[in-house]
Amino acid sequence: MYKDFIAIIPARSGSTRLKDKNISKLNGRPLYTYSTNQAIRLFEKSIISTNFSLILESFFDDRITIDERPAELCLNTTPMSEVISYLIHKYQLQGKNIVLLQPTSPLRSDVDVINAVEQFSSTKCSMLMTVSEVSSSILKCGFIDNGTFVSLSNRTEDIFSNDQALRTIYKPNGAIYIFNADDFIKSNNNFPSQNIYCISMPKNRSIDINTEEDLIKAQKEIFDIIGRSKY
Image 1 (cartoon, rainbow, N blue to C red):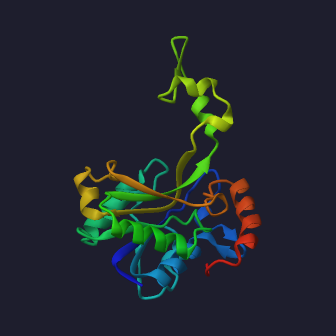
Image 2 (image 1 turned 45 degrees about the vertical axis):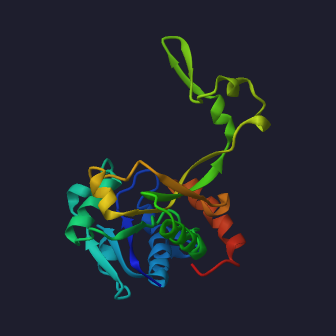
């Protein structure tokens, strides 16, 4: 169990694409419980930030603090950085290592979190995040600026390459972010943008649930991951 890391679990109500997604049921359990149970197993201290009355009235292990998120931080347009900043200053987390575990990544395994924490601890990165592989064909995409094609890639030859010859592309999967609170504060109360390390996770554990289709896909995948560590 990690004593030098604090898990933060953001579970706001009011999502639009999938109504109240953080309490949506996956395999008969609300999404947020996958993250809270994981935090209890791995961390000595965790904070769940929520405005759900269901969660606020729930009983958790003593290692989890329930924070009632202020209404002004519960808008659809509220950046996650503002929520993190609020929690850092309210609970005096300066100097602490923070692990952000979003409820929308319920297929994230304990081993994924352990690997991320160990990697963060062994490097001098300002932030570590998990990623997953996506189609490399995005390297052929771009913008149209006054009729001119502007490639997303810094290599024009990518536009004309076969897909098999393109570089492997990754994107953040939303499952794990780790950073030190002091680096967050120094970055104007925002996620550090310099010296970011990453760990690749397989696609079947990288589903980020934001729609009904995502939830259905995760339900199909969960049975194939039953052999991994406990949820």
